[in-house]
Length: 542
Image (tube, one colour):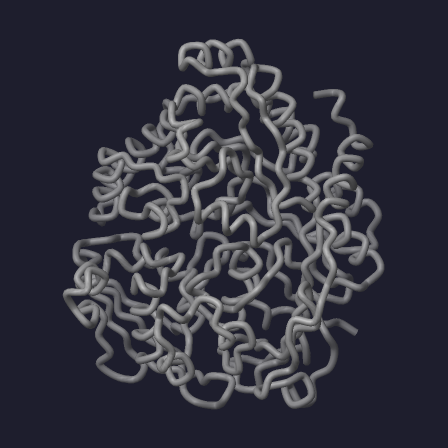
């Protein structure tokens, strides 16, 4: 690992960046709704925020990549969000859970859409049903599965979901088919959309619909104004937002890691993710503010088990033993991460005491490959969306260390649209991607990633992993409201995940951000994938 010096890492990044450069073209024009000139009277200034992945649409239903997910939940706020280890109200003002966790009563705040119409319980019911509808092909469809009547609705034997009731305009009662102590976690990434705008559009027409490319109505502190180009989107302050919005405009820019750092230093960007290797140097330099929070995501290698190459768990175990993850964290990430051995890395009470640690052991990796009958001429593709300094450097190391144990690994750079396509077609061997476990306090968040009934396209279990014993344990963990029983179920489930390695864990990075000195109110403990939901907290000083 000593040979992977800072110079080599940055050379690698530059090479990857050269591959990623693409031309920008006009992607849209100002819509007929709220614009920067009409919103936020009396406000001044623009806050510019880096997106680490390119955005293409604002549909919270079909947002698969980080860019789409972030801008979608800015435009269409979820019921609740997550900051640190707490749920935070968004469209919902508060919620109640009954004693056996079979009924969740959501009380909406008194709020309006950006066109002045009230946000009501009917909007919530519409959004939840659209998320559940197979015709929508929603990313988070599986999150609706626990609701009573969702199965019948999805099967086409019922026209509505019986477990969703709207007794009044500001109350939604969600009744579940069975107890689910962690159901709130299922709601944090489901955006609520206005029924009066999208109700007339057939659910199977949502994907690619212009109404989600240039939305005219939203609920966030900033709402869509215009596409400046394919990489840059302008949002205007929402005059009807439920809290004061400090700036007149918010601009999101898709930038690779090194470009974002350069623009932070010149003041062209106000908020950006900071490469781990730059944390201490930037603290010492003092020209920008460094903000850090606990990592709520795990850097992983996902594999499509259906393609068969890595179907034998001994091969997956061998891959982990072949990668010197401790040295990666120390040398590449400057200690700004922790090595973990399971996809269910939090909370602490879900971790059994006997987890196998996949330490760096090339000899053991070779033994496992031999036992699995691995063929040395088998090409294993390492898919990556290039441009993020840490990931680019890590993938270069992973390639070299896999090759050293007899795995013919080849790095394949993909753009966001290509990532979506290969995932859809199960056409990937090892893809480096961030697995966000939101919220960290709830282990049931892993369900949509690993359960049999969540295998894509039914859910976001993109690996295709299915283990009915694991499902039973996850069910037990959901169903019990007794902490001791939940701990027992999830620890047993975690032992299976640790042994089967359906998702290959690398490390949990610290959430590192660089901020322009003029920015105040930024909270690095907000879950990274939900960061834009809290944009009204950001203020311009001076």
